[in-house]
Length: 264
Image 1 (cartoon, rainbow, N blue to C red):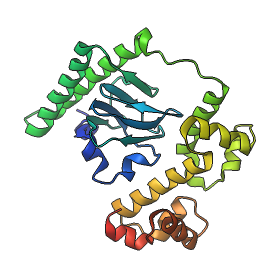
Image 2 (cartoon, one colour):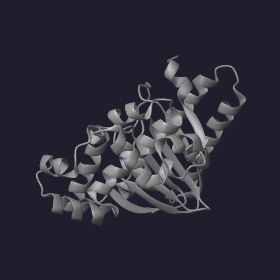
Image 3 (cartoon, helix red, strand yellow):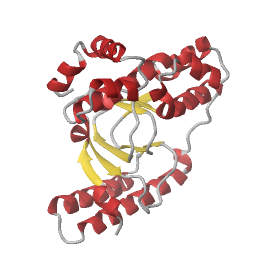
Image 4 (cartoon, helix red, strand yellow):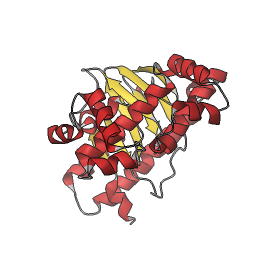
């Protein structure tokens, strides 16, 4: 059994946020794969280069390295399945948003997740093997749904393709500290066109998306690690520790040290 199998985890959406809304609401990507299953309530999300609604019995497959954000309403309830990279599972390679209308199909995924939750809670012998088996069945469920004609996404226009290309670039490049204009140049468009396109598609300008991704990374490193602020600043492409401090103060109202002590 691969040691990564022990890292497959089932959690609620509330636990995924850890009591800190910014962990889900700021645009970010993850090092692991994420299956989100919303069973009640609604919200909004930034996903696959678009801002769109999210409702009950919606499934999100978010591969590692995919930029996304979730704004869930107070009544929203659901689960998340966290699957580390490197597992032998056959998983979908592209992000997908599925609106599941068939009650039987809804029940299938709910049952799989609940069974995996029981294995995780009870920690019986070979429970890691069982978690991997349940995750494999969830992947089969996902891939079956993706094949259905009703879940084939609509073709994107030029603006939609540009927004997706930018969002796909952000996870791998935001730590460079490069300005939005550099992204526009790489995408062979003007900064004005990129800004307007992203604002229409996501509700945020290209620069605002870059800011959100950097802010999420900064807050996560300050809260979840003991790395000195100056090292975090350098890691995230800030020109100086002073600039990093001003950035954190501007967006949180606290210095990096106070934000760390406050727990985020």
